[in-house]
Each structure stands twice: as C-alpha cells, then as structure tokens.
Image 1 (cartoon, rainbow, N blue to C red):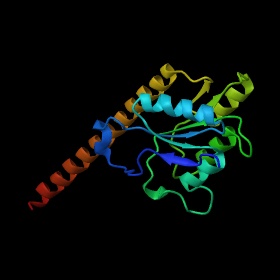
Image 2 (cartoon, rainbow, N blue to C red; image 1 turned 135 degrees about the vertical axis):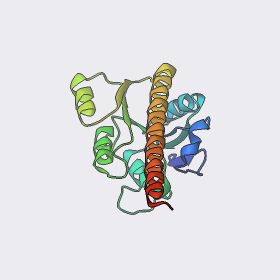
Image 3 (cartoon, rainbow, N blue to C red; image 1 turned 180 degrees about the horizontal axis):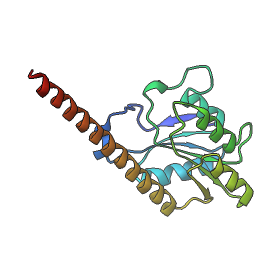
Length: 183
C-alpha cells in the first residue's frame, strides 16, 4: 500500500514562542511519486523543517480537513507553514489543490509552492495568478528550499513583530484608559 501520511511530530501547536525552535516551519509535501516524495522530504529535513508527506492531493485535503469528512489530524490546531505540491498527479492536480486551499478560509494564507518537471510557461503563469507562492522546476534543489525557508522565516518574524506591536498598543491603550479612570 502506498505511503499515505507521515509526520515527524504530531505535537502541532500555534504557539508563537516557537520562533526560537529549530523546526519552526511545518511543510506539507504532496507528490504521487515515492521517489520525489522521499527526495523533497530529505531536502526539507536537511533545512530543519518538520515535514508531513502525502501521496495525493486528495490525501492532502483529508489531512487539512478540507475533504468534508472532518477526520483530519485535528485541523483546528493544525499549524502548516507551507504546502509544496507536484503539479501533475492522478485524480487531482496540484493546480486544483491550490485552488481548493485558496478557497478555504482556514488555509488560504498558507503559501503554496507548485513543483513540476515540465517548464510550461502558461501553466506556471496560471498557478502564480491563482495564488501560488512560487513554481519550482524539478528536481528541486537545496538552494530552492533554503530560499523558501528563509523567506518564510522572515515573513513569520514580520507577522510575530506585528502581533507584538499590536498587543503593545492595546496594552498602552488599556493603561491610558485605566489611568484616566484613576483605577
């Protein structure tokens, strides 16, 4: 039987203090080829990412809880930072998976990277127009993964700083209100 889902760690949280963690980024890798899955998994692990691999777009939707059955790995607490998917897969293409993810209110903000061994410009443009973060040609290189990881870490850091700044402003506002009320 094909490898369905495998996660290094199922202890997934949305704790913002994980920014200091060496395995900050959790990547969902989707590819129907076991060779390509193993290869991308190894590249991601070498880049200090937590990786969950699935063998089809349908399995990815099940994992994310977007298949309508609500029997994923507790998707309400699921923290995925990046989805990397092959374009050409039987049943549902990576492009179709991208569209379903971008239609989801819970996961639309997650960057999706499409991978393909075919350099077809209209396909690449269509994926990028639909919201793909990037389009990588196979074989994916370690430099590609490191570039993606670095840009995601910077984006996560900006989000974290914005959240902290907003909380600081809210705390100052509450303090001012309390001070005016002389509490």
